[in-house]
Length: 352
Ligand SMILES: NC(=O)c1ccc[n+]([C@@H]2O[C@H](COP(=O)([O-])OP(=O)(O)OC[C@H]3O[C@@H](n4cnc5c(N)ncnc54)[C@H](O)[C@@H]3O)[C@@H](O)[C@H]2O)c1
Ligand SMILES: [Zn+2]
Image 1: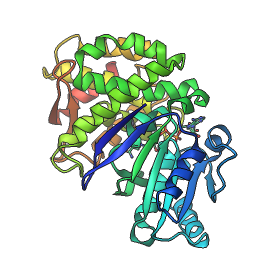
Image 2: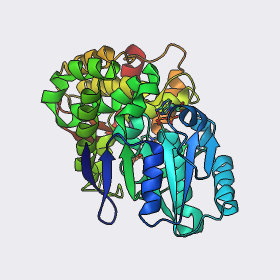
Image 3: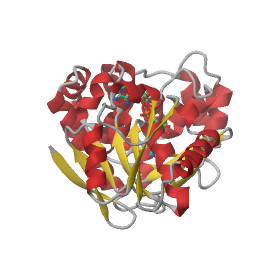
Image 4: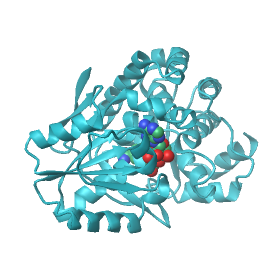
């Protein structure tokens, strides 16, 4: 089992990859000086991951993005107050990205900030959302518009928790793994097939390898830019400008995040090729990798192109008016292109 020191806002925090039960994690925290532990989870994770040994108070929300709302946050804050959680307490998120973002944000603002530990149970959470200190909720106007940087005291990842995750959610997480290889590691990109088949059969060694690679990849990007100010973290946006726009144009229904990112990586590579920034053939290679993981590579039929283009223009990361994209010159390299011409964007999304 392994431990990684992840770069945070002030110093590093540990990310443990090991076969702990939730009760072992919670009891370990209480033995280490926290006066009370307050678990936050969703109903799927409660029935599949929480064990009988968990005796501390548990807040259970509905599974899914709708729990990243002010309403749910308000309920959670009031619950913490009613349970008499205090500055010596620890909030323990046990779940995927939704639970981590919600519980982490509650921990950031409750009593001006209390400690929290993130137990990541989905592949997206293990390879991406639990790492990097971003917490928050959605507004009707857009995703993740309210939030805070609040590093966890630690992150705990037990690859065995993935045994109950649906195949579809597992594949969705693989999209983020493919993203790291496209950005950072051409050799791993070539070897993706064995990772994908090992992950789909829930082979523990493969899952551990994938998780370790992802933690190191994200750490290498976040380390130079923990507060997302210098532009380095923009790398992580590969596939996401188009991906987020797809999710928004579909009203956050019908496509999972990783599925939208998979399509986004293919289309963004096509845009890169069309403006002469990306080596020709790159989008075909990404398309093949995405398909091998059972992820979609094309826009869904029901999407309205006008909605998609509007969402891309509204992307909160555009800095100079036009659409800016994180693009790869070739597999394993990275760049940012600002002000991508609207006619090229239009041509690619209509002719893909
Ligand atoms: N904070 C960040 O840096 C960051 C980064 C990427 C994504 N995110 C956020 O993460 C969210 C997406 O994450 P997600 O895909 O994990 O969503 P999620 O939390 O909704 O989990 C996906 C589904 O899997 C279920 N689940 C999770 N673990 C399980 C397990 N072990 N067994 C059975 N079922 C399980 C959940 O109940 C849910 O139905 C989005 O809200 C996104 O904005 C945040
Ligand atoms: Zn993502």
